[in-house]
Amino acid sequence: MVDRVAAVKSDIHRLPKLGGAMAMLHRWCLVGLALLCCLPAGCRGGMQLTTARNQFYHGAFDDSQATLEKIKESDRKASVVSTLDLAMVHLAAGDTDNAEQLLLEARGTLDENQAADPVAGTISYITDDTARQYRGWGYEQVMIRAMLALSSMMSDAVDAEAYALQAQSKQMELQQAAIDAGMLDADKHYQPLALAPYMRGVLREMNYRDYDDASRAYRLVSEIQPSFAPAEIDIARAESGVHCQPGHGVVYIFALVGQGPQRVAQQAPVTSNVLLLADRVVSAVGKYSVPPTMAPIEIPAVAIPETAIDTVFVMADDQPLGLTQSITDVGQMAVQQYEAEKTDLLVRAVARRIVKKSAVAAGKDAFGIQDPMLQLVVDLAGSAWEATEKTDTRCWSLLPREIQVLRAELPVGTHNISMQAFGRGSPLQRDPTARTIEVEDGRNTYVLATAPSDRVIAAAAR
Image (cartoon, rainbow, N blue to C red; front, side, top):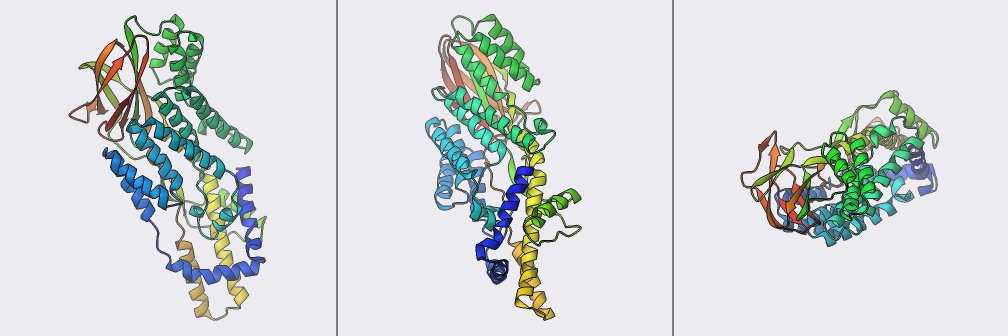
């Protein structure tokens, strides 16, 4: 909180310097009101992203890819999120090389965007947060690294463990930043990821040497996510030093289940605590006054789309293997982090509203406007200026709600793996999605199932 409030102060403090003097800025803002009123809503990019998302959910990967590539090239503001979504399309289709390259590109861009952007940060107070370069939400920064790990696992697995550790490290970095900012329950909002040690255990166990490392990793999984029942079996197996039965190999089915967190514009009440924090921000950098009360204000909240799917039922050669179980709940992670960020989002939105209202009032004084009708016109223009604000709902929209996994041992040879989306204990799709795999003696085979709603739309294998 302390660091973010300081950042808000820094952005607002630059406002007078942009025009050389506060009066000049107010005149500039006032003259721009009429132009701002005439601007279109500008939701085309958002509509295209929705189209791409729906194409993906229906398994139309080529169409979704084409739509996202067009957005990536033509819409600067949506370039990063379209890159992230494009990576998910390639990953689901089994194109791990392109998926990894796109994820690395997005990671690099977001890392660069974390640095201060003083001009865009300042402009966002006279427009809205969409003027800023997209920095990614905390959970997205973590999930980029987690998806890189999964992409590597579905390829040559060379960097899978390193990426998984990076995901865990990023989550702990966010937790430490929250602690440093004075958050007392940071560990509640930024919990470790069970996926990271699970992947480490899987890879360590497969080399037939590091069973102790594998056992420790599985124990950590059990501590982080006690509800993941297979962890106890994994621990016992690693401690026994037996990767699998002779003449068998291991199949891991990773499932991307449900539709993940979306950012939506939502009215939030402005509490006295928010007003107090906003007052500290704006009064420290200029002659701005905070009203005693303020109407609810829009911020980018987290919403998890409701879908019927709970899990994926897996069979091999018409014999049941079981149900996938959650190893990482992405939706829960996003909600927990949103609760930690909500006050900061409100403070920023309130500070922006105060800056705009103060600019209009000071502009009337600067121009010496006394006529009641002209004052009314200016006030209406000021209201229209505020109405042009767009809540920054940019996000990585094709993340899953959960990452689930199932481990099974199968005899060496060719097997037909079939998968069905299940909800409330019943199948949601009539015809299972099938994939043929080759199981090698003592080796791991990985299957990635994508099931965003009521069916498994894709199954890639390595």
